[in-house]
Length: 211
Ligand code: GRF
Image (cartoon, rainbow, N blue to C red):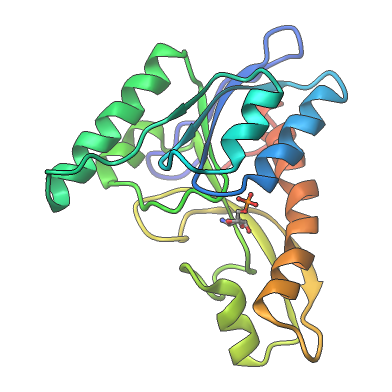
């Protein structure tokens, strides 16, 4: 194991790893994970869903599955760094009070501060819609189309202090087809994401991933 990554414990279906899934939008990835967890005995369970937006459609998926969910928006009236830290403080408090063991970013549109990452390093993962290190950032599908690549995909990686730079765990590829738009490529990638993320969480919670 390199650096300061601390991996989660090896869990069992009888005592599954308690995940918090952080979202900002529609939550199709969250829905796929909840379905996967409900279909069989897994070593992980979604114990909490947090959104930074009250209107995130994904909160509905949590409620429909009777999973605890909170919307924790940023406060008005604070500025810059202060606002970020205050917000993360409330997220951290929620993670502690629900005994969360691992954080799963699933379309969470905020970049976490180094101090937050340090607390969770090795126990926080993200999914990104490109074959990292190609096309990091918020416009991965657009950037792939503009670059004219014939192949893209998705990456699950540990989160570190950078943006989409942490250790890569697993990837899946999709073709980029002539005439693809951001929307068509996004949908093709999501189909792969919805298979990949739950499987990677199986691997991590079973102690089969090292970093
Ligand atoms: C996914 O494409 C993921 O790769 C990216 O954000 C998107 C989330 O989509 N980080 P959804 O909210 O799960 O539908």
